[in-house]
Length: 94
Image (tube, rainbow, N blue to C red; front, side, top):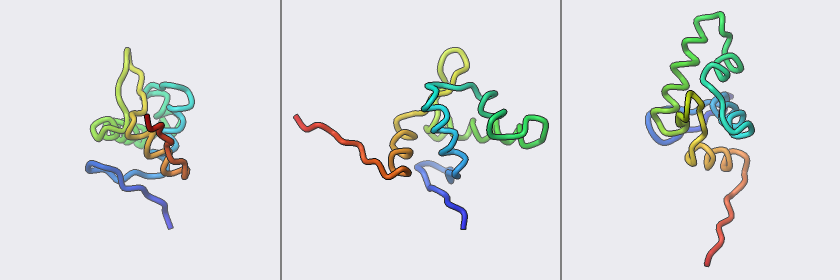
């Protein structure tokens, strides 16, 4: 059985999406080219699918573009990573 995570918006998140979020989060930022090379075969038609997937993740608020072409995970994606790993955010109450 394939694990999938349903996020907000019109996208069904796949385990590969979470792995991309983790990779970006651990390095601080990545370009779409780096993600495509890491998660899709750049010499195949799937490379185009990778760029399309990244665009969709931006449109649904999981990734955001930075300057100049860097991608960052959003708070929405970080919360999802925390849920997926079973870690709950601890908030201080003043």
